[in-house]
Image (cartoon, rainbow, N blue to C red; front, side):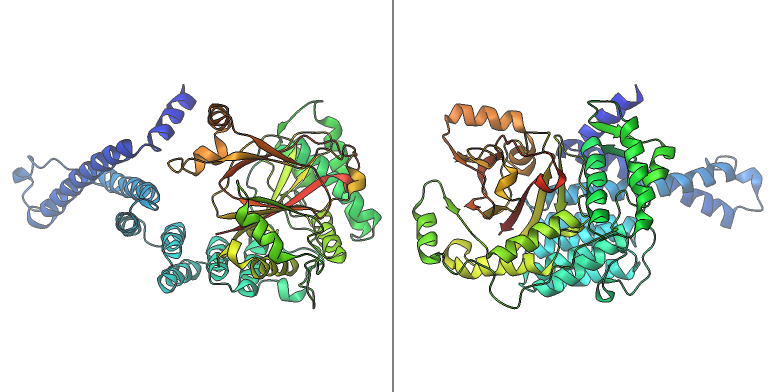
Length: 489
């Protein structure tokens, strides 16, 4: 019963009219409580010696304390409602959104999340100076906060300052996930990071299998010392306890205690700086690739041998060795790593910048917006479902060796010849699979199948619907399928 009520309440909070109604009611309640508190103060000041004249006053001491508590709770509720309305109006009416953010901060001054949300909206409007001021205000509230540094990194990225973005993302990641035992001194934050907080005791079988396999690989390669062997044994014992076929797993506190030193933490990261030379394949005819993309309908081109071989190998090692695979919340047997949560190295930014320079008419000066990678358990055989992305251009490429792929005709990407409708929002085209599939069926959209190849890239319009193709990869850890995505604009 309580869960169903909570679900209904959360649904109401997603609807604009409901938010407006709740806001009006909360302000009325806040005003009434304020009047009653004022009445008590008037009584206290002017009628303290005349109790016989104050019997008509509605507020006593106990009620006064309760009203003060109610005022505090109502101020928090008002801040939350103004925040939600600010987020609602963020894309639709920025001036209205800004007013809501200001009211939210009046109700809860010193809330770093509000500074970050307001600043992110200003960043999208290219009001960089004001955005930076708000992010720095949030950072001043606590040096151990990771989100203001993430926002500063995105700000630097939007201004083309990728070295500063790399630095800020590095700091934010180590504040959030801890310092790896092999971290170089320049990557360690000046402030002493607190131990990473337990975010959830829920995990997935894929995450546990991956972490055990990665630990084995790192120990066998002497990347980790023998002191980590008891932790590997703890993972293996935990996997033996997990019911066969389990997907999502709710760890008990005792189970989590066995692996808490590593689970969800940054315990190893492979340092991969930018190369001192060019990383794109010099044999590629970028003028032809650019013309092929601009003349294609839909906007789609396949680029084989995107990077020089040692650059591909370096990114493969970064993905296989680094303990950055923290997103285990998505349906399916795969894990995600993101630019603002560990998927962050100099070589990635060098590749992103080189592609910008090689394809000026395609990228059209759009900044790098996001980077991520997904790693797929070979037992899954199915990856990310059909969706579109909120950007201008996608560059998707693969780094796992071809020898891992047992079916060379599949394993890559399906790109549908249909774009997300302009009136769909991000949740619609990125998460609502049923609606998307119905739309594609109604459109009778064609599809281009791009088979998997190591170092093959697919450049396409981000609004095109796409999905991971079925795949059949060999089961060993080094054979897990890895794709990298760069988003521009």
